[in-house]
Length: 173
Image (cartoon, rainbow, N blue to C red):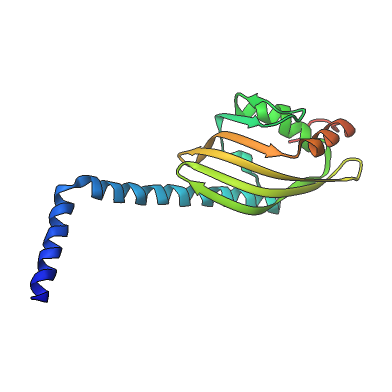
């Protein structure tokens, strides 16, 4: 009797699965989502490790038309329409204020669908010899392994203090 019950249960499961493609599609979709999340997390992790090592950085992840929004009330807060504007108006002037470049220490990396959130501390030394230390959270919307939209959160007081105290030393890469 137990064997007959198992057989009927198995037959019922197979019948439902074969007549309900959405169950199989949902499973395949969930698997694909996990693969995308894993791939995006690994790309961001690798970029941050290269940044930490001084051999690369996270901005290589940006598409040319990526929008970058600095949230809050820092002197750089606004939405930059593309990678070139963000790099020329924020990153290059920031780097030109630094004697020792900013290096990150990742605290947390989370992926949900096409979104990767990275929570990290970063520190460097400004041209005047004083340390710059800040904590950041970036929310990165990814497409095909590249960031197409980023929202950045950080301590605006710390940023503004550096931005006004230290004048750029000229163009920095």
